[in-house]
Image 1 (cartoon, rainbow, N blue to C red):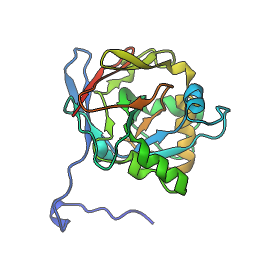
Image 2 (image 1 turned 120 degrees about the vertical axis):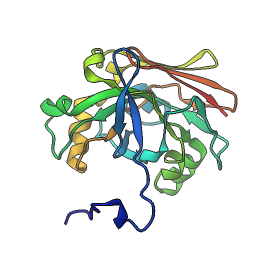
Image 3 (image 1 turned 180 degrees about the vertical axis):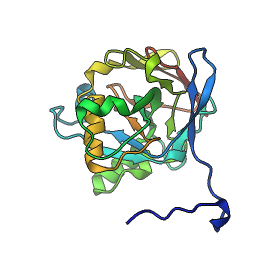
Image 4 (image 1 turned 30 degrees about the vertical axis):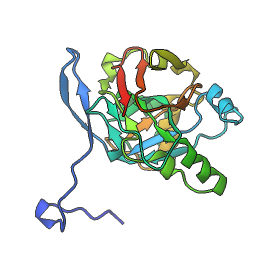
Length: 241
């Protein structure tokens, strides 16, 4: 059964929400259009040192995923609003993969042909609420999918980012290095993540994949200045307010 699709704005009984999007970076540094976002997938514990840090075995078990909402993205400001209902908000710096096409049961060998570009993202987490959900065996949405929980840089098209397999990834708080690693340390590589996800969901143009974070996750406080870097991509700078 296909999803219901309305053909004109006049068919909607309430105003149609805007489509979330991310800016695309031109080689000159200016904006080169907008990338519309469909879904936001996140892979958990995809760096061995982070898996150990969180108390889990880093062996290569099947990957697991959770989702944030497209309107959780934060891209047009340098301020991250400290969320309500939490006293323990953590930073997690990640490579973000933006898809230009999709499908089901995508072969690993074909996965890169579906990638439009890459960005630097932060999977901000209400760790206290996530911990409570874990203990109760409940979903993680309250800890992961809150407003502004997915700050993201401009998207760099694939042809401008040639070091996707070996780039360094890091995050500093107030000038002090907190997270550092290399994209080659990911347990599940980009083509494997795309292929595995496509066996569970129908991937579509506009999907984003947050690919996991290295060790060193920790709390942020109001007034903290975060600088997230992946060599070759736009730096993401945010102040917690």
